[in-house]
Length: 139
Image (tube, rainbow, N blue to C red):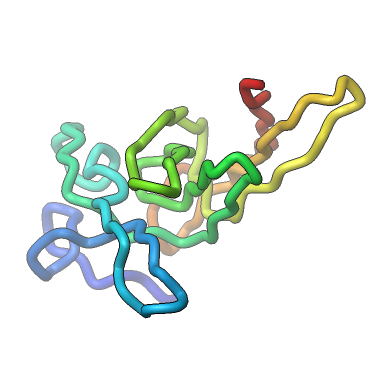
C-alpha cells in the first residue's frame, strides 16, 4: 500500500504550502492565479485548520458560469472557486473524504447540481464512507 511520507504530527515532511489550486493561461503558459487549497484540520493531532494548502487526490470541474469545484483535500471539503480570480466562493464539509472528481448535471427541475462521491481514501487517511451528495447551484 502506498502512503504519503508524513512527519510524526501528520503533516508532509517539507515546508508548506502542500497543495494549490491554480489557473493557467494556455496561450501564454503563465500562471494567472494560484491559491493554497485546504487546511490541516484533519491532518494533525491538533484539530486546527491552518490554511497552508494540503495534498489532494481528485480532479476539478468548471461550470459554464465560471465556477470551479474540487474536493480531494485531506480536510474533507468540497470547495467552489471563481475561475477568474481564484477567490473561494463556497465550501461544504463532507462526511468522508471526497477523493473524487465532482460531477454536474441538470435535474428534472431544470436546475444545475454538483454531485460528489465521498468515500474516503485509506492511503491518505481521510474518513472512509459511502456517500453521494448533491448540491443545487444558485441561478
